[in-house]
Image 1 (cartoon, one colour):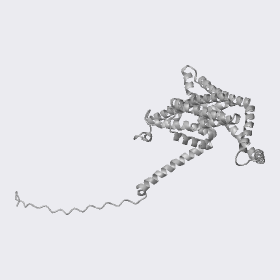
Image 2: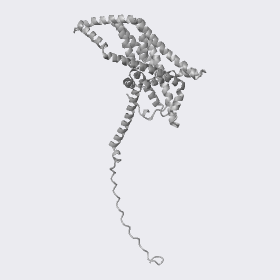
Image 3: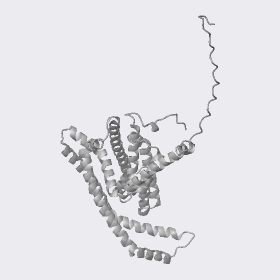
Image 4: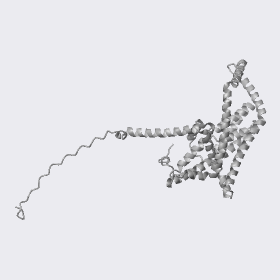
Length: 387
């Protein structure tokens, strides 16, 4: 009996707990095949192939449209170089159209003056250079006659006949037609470049704002930072390179004049132009100047010219270039070499000239990708770089 007169009922025993069910085996569907290490590697490989395919299509399109792409890129580089002049004229109260025309005509006038000076100097000294070349060839034949193996006059005449046959062949005619086509393309591209340069100088900021219309917020600010840094990098590179090239041309030109090498003015202008090709431009200019000195004067004067070229290049490379180009070109020499090779393969000499400033502008855009002084995440330094 219970406390209040009722029987106390005992609780029924609980059944034993069932053992936990074993874990379900992993699904073997199509999704699981991409979850392991090989699957992730395959996914990344597909992504890389897709990116490579897009880049290949873009490069193919650029190589097929060089008549449009090259003038636009040249106009962009020149516009970035002379944009400070346009801004200065506008700050002085000049109308936008007047500032654009003055800057454009000044640039075209300088280029025309340089071409005229080179052609005039070549025409004036051509006879002297031709006579020197004849003497140099005769001296070369004399040197060749002293070699261990013999080169007879009959072999020389055979080589001359073969050269004349080549000049009279259909291949030369086809080459002449190709040269005429290249000249027509150059003239077309030049006028296109002038027109595009005019609009870049006049409406450059408005054009960039139009291209940024689809973006808002942080993406819009990033686009503005990238545009500003690109113009600064391209302009600084061109102006700095022009200063360095002018110093090289003046220094080497003075050395050539002292030695007595003919065609001093054309060679100096060529030194100035080749200086826009980093690493190899100075070597090409020095080799050409030494070759002219060898043909016109002799081996001793050619060695003196080589010494002058080396001395001028060392002075500008160690003293002037670090000061002028420090802020505009922050690329490793290996990157410059790869960019030069790629540009030369894709667009020849023009590509070699444009490759380095384009690579520098891309690196400059990466440096401001996440903020005014914040590079993109992948480009940030994460650990000390030891030698």
